Structures are given as C-alpha cells and as structure tokens.
Picture: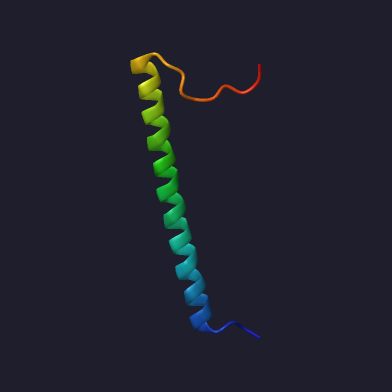
Length: 53
C-alpha cells in the first residue's frame, strides 16, 4: 500500500519547513556567539560560563 501523493507532498513541505527553521536557528546561534565574542574582547570580561574548576 503506497502513501497517497497528498501525504507525500505534505511530508515534503513539512521537511522543507523544518530545514528552513533549522537553518534560521543556526544563523541565530552564530550571530549570538559572535556578539558574545565581540563583547568579551571589547569590554575584557568573561561572559561565557567556564565549566570545571
């Protein structure tokens, strides 16, 4: 029994939307990491939490 073309098309659309959202979140993460790095360098402060002792 093959899935109906409609459900395949819907799954393709959902996959494309999920991939677009993932790309957007990766871009956001990169931007935030860059902002933190710039702030740490400019103001000579540690913003990121240091793990371990």
